[in-house]
Image (cartoon, rainbow, N blue to C red; front, side):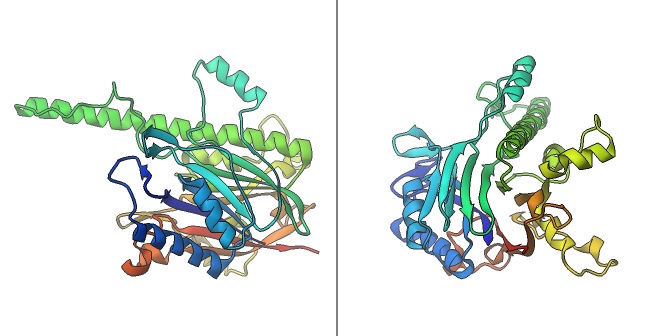
Length: 347
């Protein structure tokens, strides 16, 4: 089985526009964007795909249906700014296997209790999607598709620094300082939101896992480095309230693992080379690359777990359009790499 996470980068059917009235694809541009997506699907043929940045869900459903994905789900809608202009794209999922249940992910009762105590209202910046899919030889699996809050500073209109013409150096310095302060505080607010989204989502995944014990797959655009900062708790595997033996006995089945780590652990890598092998970047800002797109797997996909069902034997990052693009082919592709893993069922 092959699973992919695919940030589509403003998938919106004309004459609708994303964010601004100038952002409308021509018919030719729209056809090129759709053809690029179809070409990827035909070449790599993932069985289940999690999509981000979906504005036009019906158009995406029609596209993937033509590419032999009969099952499709979306649980939210983008927000209209005015007339045909939209913001806040949503996530979606397409599958070659039957989708038996689909829902949005909501905070658990415990999370709501803790949030009430903090007196800070919580809401996901983009509603995560959970789809329960009947996978051959594995049975029911819970797939989660997410697009966590970006690193863009959170500023409301009242707080945003005003661009006024400064008459002297003191005013210019003051304006520069205000911009810096807003950048620092706004970026931290975004980090807090992103970290909260990850924590609330993980809590919901743990509760769902306890209820039905389905294997879980979490994929999407995390907008941050998984192993540092506010997202690292997605890989939490123990609690200080239990002994090491108790953690292994009771919590081993409730861990999420980075599919890249599972893949490299299963490869025959020289011990001297192992530290230098890092996961491929999935996004570039100028010449600087970062890894923002992930697929995490529950313990059933870890060969070291006693109740292991499958293993990661392939990890592919499609990034040619980012590192060596052809304008004719890639000009309306996406600004993210596409991450795909291959799973092998253990018999």
